[in-house]
Length: 362
Image (cartoon, rainbow, N blue to C red; front, side):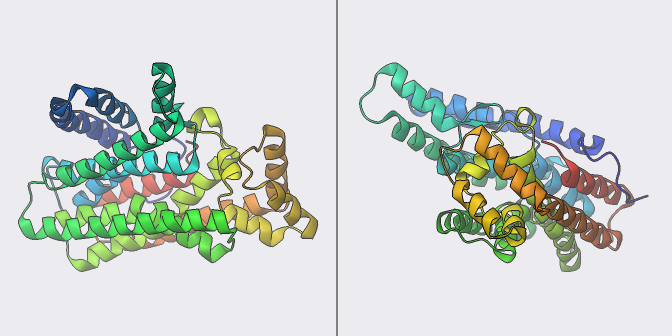
């Protein structure tokens, strides 16, 4: 089958089928887990409700790619590995909940961020203490709970012990990398460290590898894949994962907030040192760099100044250069995919996912 791009701005049909499967499996798995939580104390009901709401939507990219990696290695029935797929979605929920606290984000997926919901609850109830601190604490703890459930669901896989252990070790590597990437991201924004190599390292560790390469590898390991195939899926996933994160960075500045569910000024206000910003600082003259750095990272950034920053970034060619990087990374991934020894139907699905991740608008 062809590996040429097909309709990349909307999820391909095969991905949508897997997303629906994951939605159903997640609801089925969370229900008893959250019932057990609430049985500990009725005061935990709002926590259970919020974790359910926070995981109720999403693109389900990571669990879907785990299932595709499993099929790429010859796995047939998907039920035995639904638990590890759900683990990736719960880990992602943890990352988002914590990320919104770190970034002080107001919204997530078109709804108030979890820390804002609990801060408002605190103020409405008239409780003592700092409402914002309470909201942040609750969001962190709910994220931690999602992290715990990730382990619980992963270990519910019904596959032989050796591939399960190998896959769980790769899951641990994934978590180490994403924590390292998040740490580097916070450090870069705070210290003002900006260069292309650092930005690409952050993009790879914080999101790219954990979003694409590692899920594919974990799925293949669960199926008992040979090392060569696992490495090949990783080589396909690495450039694709960077493209995924850098597309996200572009959407964080130039996207449609109604489609992305988050402010398009937030990355600028937080001073994110992304490849887009590194490209801008490398291209702007001294006055342009001073203008960009004057407002970048200002938590009080208003719409007018955000628009001026977008104009600076676009006019110097940074947006076009970053778009070109995404296109080049997708092309690199497709070249690896062409040589992978995987079933033709899976190759086609992976090619369509690559197009979608590179061209998505949400």
